[in-house]
Image 1: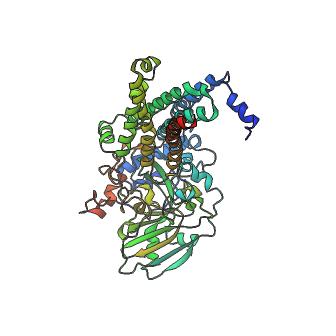
Image 2: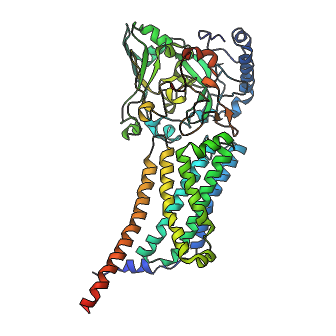
Image 3: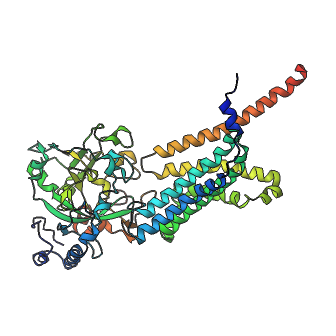
Length: 315
Length: 225
């Protein structure tokens, strides 16, 4: 399937016809279903806090029965240990977290390093709305309408130097603002990493919003990573630094439990977590579990990144 | 060293009339609330148990099991310290409650969480150490629950006492199971481990004191006589 990341982002849900030019039939059906669902259900589905009539964005890799997870679940069921380890804690504990001003450092093996105010960083690309599946390593999943830019645009602007092969991301470290960092549940600051080709992949987003509005603090405001074919914890939140490097960065969960969390973290139903199976998942809001798809349903787009690799070893 | 008057009042307390009602409510209400929450969340689209009611209910039932094990183990120290012998029968009540919540926790996992997926259930009971440990706790509780009747005590006498000492293994297996099941946040497992250490440690200390005071008084008797 062809991804056209440069296509216009602010289509109304009625503008289905031009989308059909570049969406596959399955995606076209999903989009049509979404549009009908959005018109019929938006008011009832979303609580008043949610932007009720926003166009949700273009569906990527969705199946016909993938419906966006309600705003209330997306914003109250969060893993963001910087604001507490309970799923409901980040929404409460991050209430006063201020994300302006916010500076992101882009450095390491690049020709044009720089410190960017958030809005300037986002000017590197075109802000788009994309609906992705989201699969947590804990075997639950959501469908999330993200808003953001492609990470590739930020990296291209910084001009990776010849030796650069990996990208390291770092979360803000400030225990006075992120109370979870006062206990040593994980090593702080949280870091994550991608291989450069993964980082340049058109599916990889730097998200600054969800449901058409700025990211709520509990979702990783003001800027987070979104890699829909990887387990959710790869999506590092509240990013302050993006560093290109020539060696594999150390990542927070891999440091915490290397036998349970690898570097790649690709969604893979055939490789169990040591403590549970990854073959199925529970979609938030559903009772019966559904089978987990290879690369979370994005195999057509990303499988080639890993050709020849033993995914059992490189989990 | 005069004992303060309030201490006499505390020790003299008899079982209040509402005690049995309070115990019944305490053991039934949380379980009923979990079931009601699950039904409400799926049938009426509420979020009593949050966004993932199946997982949340499972966790709550596991934690209730631990909490009733604490209540069970607290009975004897409270009887000794406060002189409240009327608490004695609650030890069995709380122990049985812990067993039923442990059973509900496992059934919830098998039926609602993994939804009787045969491969996953088999893997759980053979490959996942923390589930094996938790299941072992349930297996240890089973014969104890089955022989919790007065008739069993009368019938098995000394053997019953020996069998029921296995109960002290259950909280240890329980917290190990919990500790191994969390991703990184070991705060609560540590807290409950400490509580169990105190409750079990008190028993060791108490038993030693009884033995030593017994040993001290027996040979001393002829000398002082």
